Image (cartoon, rainbow, N blue to C red):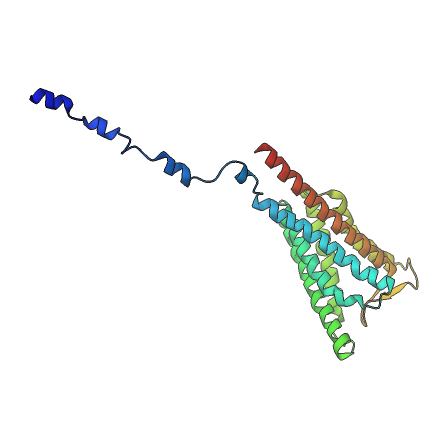
Length: 246
């Protein structure tokens, strides 16, 4: 009898190997990260940030060209009122271009971006003051016009440094980057040598630009649009490639 009871008793190993004590594989699978087509369709965060930089470039290019066209077509609106928006859009676009490069433009790119942003912020402040005094107080800017010149120089020099760093990084398209660098410089040079005598445009009561800068601003705006479009195109192409590989 004792032998039969021992034979029928459940061995300890059998208890340990029973389905009741087995690890719940289904629970482990359910808590894992989602996979499959649903997960692969999500674009990487870096691609989203890069795409927004391209969108900012296109918007900034339109914001640069719009006041020029409004002033030339004489649509009855003072274009310098839009200049604060233009300067802010430009600062955001340049920051977006640097983010799109993933920091590969290095310290030189960071210095150029900081200088350009400082110049754009100074111009934003001065253009806002000009618009307020002209439209609300009906007076002209009495002092501080030197800040406009300083802000413009800082902006142009910053763009040149940032553009040079961008070319060396080799991430963004070279064509629009070169146009972005030289367009404003060429415009200033043409006005300095008097290439277009007697062709002047008054941007409000205190800022007068020559025809050279008008051409330069148009090319500059187009270069921003081109560069922003190339960033968006590259972002979409890489996102499509990553989806096809998944």
